[in-house]
Image (cartoon, rainbow, N blue to C red; front, side, top):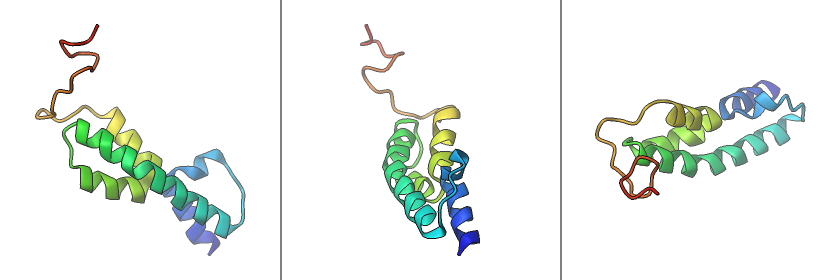
Length: 92
């Protein structure tokens, strides 16, 4: 159980905080973090021309790692332009 907790904690990114808790707490917290990051990852991915449903699943499976990937790497060439962004003609 402790090994599974550490794997889940590392995939969600929670282990980066060097939190030493019991296995049940690490699993529950990691799953809560993943559940919170999944929709954020999906929204960021969709705005960057990537598949929202796919990135929802990846955001839940890999938490902070998936969100970091979506935010760091460049948008796809066919990404939709959103009004109000820093490069949009409507920006002040």
